Image 1: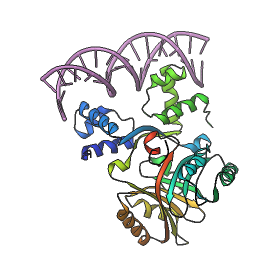
Image 2: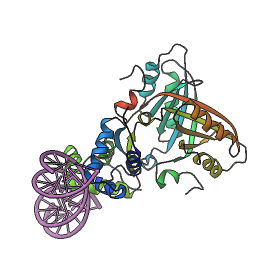
Image 3: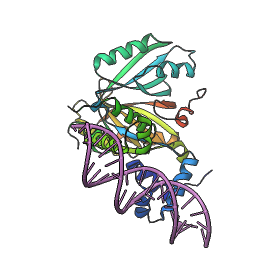
Image 4: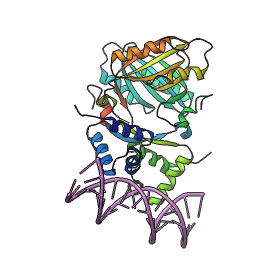
Amino acid sequence: MPEIDEIDHRLLRLLREDGRRTFSEMAGTIGLSVAAVKRRVDRLKELGVITGFTVQIDYGKLGWAIEAFTELHYAGATPVSEIVRTATDVAEVQTVFTIAGDPDALIHVRVRDLGHLQQVIDHLRHAGNVTGTKTLLVLGSWSRDAPAPRASRIAGMK
Amino acid sequence: MPEIDEIDHRLLRLLREDGRRTFSEMAGTIGLSVAAVKRRVDRLKELGVITGFTVQIDYGKLGWAIEAFTELHYAGATPVSEIVRTATDVAEVQTVFTIAGDPDALIHVRVRDLGHLQQVIDHLRHAGNVTGTKTLLVLGSWSRDAPAPRASRIAGMK
DNA sequence: AATGAAATGCGGCCTCC
DNA sequence: GGAGGCCGCATTTCATT
């Protein structure tokens, strides 16, 4: 088992806040040389702790204003692979979580409007072995990492 | 309203795949000059379409193996700000979604093990105006963006 | 208004200590 | 883990359509 020390965690925290931080900047704040920081980040990638880097997008500004979670119930014998496949086939599905318990899966969907949401849900209900759905419409969200924009979507927050 | 054209979408797609992509690399694939690419990315940040950059982490490799969603029910008159506050106070809570409908909120939590999960849920149930919870334990997940590691957690997928 | 081309720092990257 | 050197990239300015 690989050792991940406090410095590694500080590096990860810095990169969560800003994934494009430069090695020199992080070296400065942590108090290490640039080479050492690069070696550590490379190692974290190697170990699979860091799986990649990505951009955070405000999808509302791109016209995808509605966000929802839908719980999916499948017929008893449905294999996991089938569950994942039916869900991932739908372009609007961002993430699929297979669940132990009441619903068999929880999916995160992004759509343009409520009519669009209806279409997606209808499609899911008729696909594969889906026996039932329950959709939770997202009004606002807050994320531990995310800076202001995402939090500001919750009225009364700042 | 700002115009976001096809090239902007292609840039966003490239940055979603790899948030540390180089301007010159993207300039090459898209067929634009580096300066033009930088101007567009800067503009997307300015417009708030790009809210930031971050690192993708395999939390399981950091010892946070368990992931769950918990639906929270609050007493009738609980204001949204209170809902968000009680949830965000808990360090294990990664994201809070306020919901229109049956549960009042859906939270995404990451914990070390099932005992830890129990602690977090107990804490939530006794905090604020929480009247009930229902927890969905995540077995596996698939994300549209994420490369292999996240998907590999679902048995039988590739 | 958006692009491309060129000049300048700075950062990533590699080698050696 | 640190230091130095080279190359590449980001960044800015200027000219162009």
